[in-house]
Image 1 (cartoon, rainbow, N blue to C red):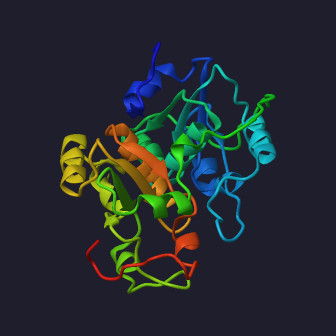
Image 2 (image 1 turned 60 degrees about the horizontal axis):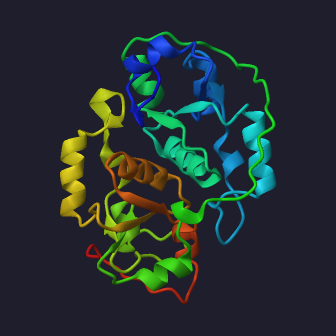
Length: 274
């Protein structure tokens, strides 16, 4: 396969498992990975790509840390990265955002991850796979794929801007409070990430045509810049990914509600309406 699509089905990947230019990264729980993973897939702990510090624990770590992580994964410029997880695309989507941020645009998401792979009855391996490290340097980040709190504040209310909140309905309304304050960014629309997965089809993304229609009805149209977030930009890894697949101009707000909800100066709306 000379060019891999952004959204890759398990049956499409199977005959190419031996391709030398592939780097398959599994972000499942370590127990899941050790028990069953796609042949040649290596494991990545999601914590390795998180800053883990207030006020933005979901931000990316330093350039030096990113260089170490991707070198330890054996990433090179010519590698096409296949990403998947065991939860329907949250961590995998976040990894795709990280690849966007470091300027590596050769990637695909395995639709449904390990659940869809197992549902299809495809071959798996067990145990930890040894990795041949590379010397990958992340010299800078591409800020075209993220928005800061200040940038979002400056864009609120503009016709060509939208916010997709991937949290639960109770977090969005303010009924469930995780940060100092509950509620949502003014104008943000809510669609919880897990609603976008088909549990009957191995957590594959819902029908894309219907999903596209849904996003349009929510005001998340192709002519807008769309910021997506959750609490720490994990769940919104999925919405970032789906938006990209459906041709939206997606930007991650990595600070997410951990930053916004803990800043007493940011505007907040409560209730079920934007």
